Structures are given as C-alpha cells and as structure tokens.
Image (cartoon, rainbow, N blue to C red; front, side, top):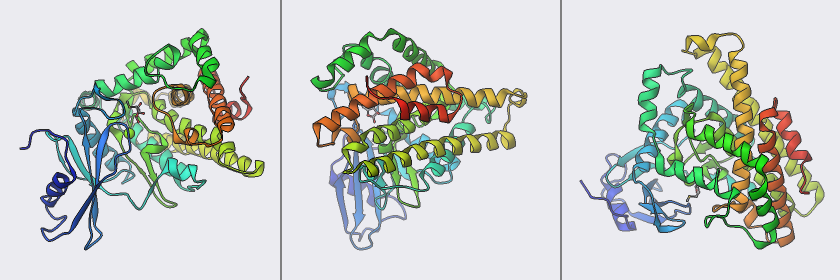
Length: 402
Ligand code: SR1
Ligand code: MG
C-alpha cells in the first residue's frame, strides 16, 4: 500500500498500467495534468497506439485555489467516489464510470469524457444543448428521490447519510455562500467599481434574515444525497449526452440546493449575454433560450420526481393526500432561495464564474455583475412566496439594477 503523496505524471502512468484489463504493458502512455478546478489534481492519460484514455483524479490535502494555508480532508476523495458510484447507478450513467480507486492515495480512476465539453465553456461559446434540461431534470429527480426517506427505509438512509458527513467541504459552502458575501471577509473578491453593491449586501437585514433561514436548511435538513456543487463547470455535455462530474461536496442536505445551483449558473450566463453578443436580437434570443432551459429543467424534474413518488414511494405516511404537493412546493421555494445565494456568491465571493469574469468590455461586465446581484437579492427575498416556476422566471425577467 502506498502512503499519500501528490502524484506526478510518471507516477500516474505507472499507477494506471497496473489496472487490470485496461492498458497493456506495451501501451505508449502520454499523461497531462489538466486540473483547472479549485481543489484537485486531474491527470489525463491516453495510449497513443489505441487512443484509449482514462482520468486519474487525486485530492490535494489543501484547497489549491488558496494554498496550503487552507487544509482539506483527503476523505473527500472517498466521498466523491462513493457519490459517483451511487449516482451512476441511480441516473443510468449520467456520471462517469469509476474503474479503480485508492483510498490511501485519495485517488479515483474514471471514464475520460474528453469528447464532451464543460457546459460553462459551451454556453460561453453560444452553444445550445437540446437534451440538457431533460437529462439534468431526470438526474436530479432520480438521485434526490432514491436517496431520500421517500424511497429508503429510515435505517438504511441513516446508514448512508453517515458515510456522507463532509465537514470540510460543507464548511466551504457555509462560509463562502451563506456568510462571507454578507460581511467584511478576506475571502470576498470583487472590484472596487461595485463596492456600493457589496455594502448594500452587508446592510440589508431583510436579506440577511432570508439567508439565515436558507443557511439553517443547509446546516440541518438531511433530505437527500446532494451533488453539493452542481454548477455548469461540473457538467460535461455534447448535443446528445450529459455527464455530471465532481461530487466531492456531496452530503445529505436540502434537495433545492442542487436544483438551485444549476439554475443559478444558467441565470449567471443569462445576465452575461450582452457581453457575448453583438446585436440586441442575438442577446434576446440567447436569453429566451436560457430561460426556457430553466423552465424545462424544473418541469422535467417535477414531473419525473412525481412519477417516481407515485410508483415507488416506500414511506407509508408520504402517501397522505396533499403531502406530495406541499413537498414539491417547498422544494421549489428552496430552489429559488438557494439559486439567489449561489448567484450572489459568484459576484462578490471568493470563486467567480468565467461567464461574467471573462467579458472583455468593462462596462458590460459591470452591468452583468449588477444585474446578477439584483436578481440574486430578489430571488432570496421572495423565495418563500414563490408558487410556480413562472414566478421565478418573472423575477429574472423583470429585475434590473436600481
Ligand atoms: C475553495 S473552493 C471554492 C469553490 O470551488 C468549488 O467549485 C465550490 O463551488 C467552492 O465553493
Ligand atoms: Mg468542483
């Protein structure tokens, strides 16, 4: 057994050569470290003779984005791998297949998805993904329903939730999403040009109250096994295929947190459109498509989730008339509130999104930042009054910076 140390390219090649039935000893393996995320090493290894390829992902004992001063548990590699395996099974392959792993080395060997693109990059390039809403709606319905008390008996559910206590990564979310944007914090990161907006986030106590309620849900509601970081950088796409990656933030939490995360990232791309298109017509066309994607995603989730409930619910009390409607209505309200929190953190918090940060024109970039903050605030402030996905869409369309 090897003791933990971060791999270099040669070690990654030597490791995968030993995986049974994958590469032969005669393979001519080429390795590139391609990790561009905040936390891990990612090695892409391919055989130049056969073009077969594989990914080795290894956790670092600290947050790469900040450095060794921010230590992180290596157990997150186990959590990510176990979440991938559960989600692979529940979503019929909408996540990469795990081929091998080593807990001591905190590494997982998995399917290479290089024939896909990261959805955030695709959206920035103006691409559309016709099957995305349906795929992600189904992914969310299946993974959330089948890991909840609706489908698991309470003993199995508690046994499973114990394996996904993920304190270090939850703490990142608790701080970066639910606390820092509303206070002075060294973690915050925004240009001086929007200091007025940041100050108003710090002073708006009505907003703080709603964020405190959402934070409480994140801290206490063990509703289902979440992906935990479901932004458009955690999804690989082609026109025909969708694959969800990187569930290292997985834990038992409120369902709306995952749904809100992906909707927030579609809205962040929506507010960025004037920065990426030359004509008003093109902006409006892209905006309409993104809002339709949000609507279809929620509708697909709701319809699949209700179908699973009607055919496969195990909890007797969940069959009580009216309960399903109340349950779904609360998921929608949580979704809207969490989406608002996720939008705000990407503008004033530590980690941003390329959809907005790489807009070249400074005026258009600032306009996108201000619009995102205005929408984020309205979603949070109104989330407890939301009763349909159309309510959310209206807020997004009608909200402009003051
Ligand atoms: C210190 S990690 C910063 C962010 O990157 C991840 O993707 C999560 O969203 C986290 O909040
Ligand atoms: Mg990630």
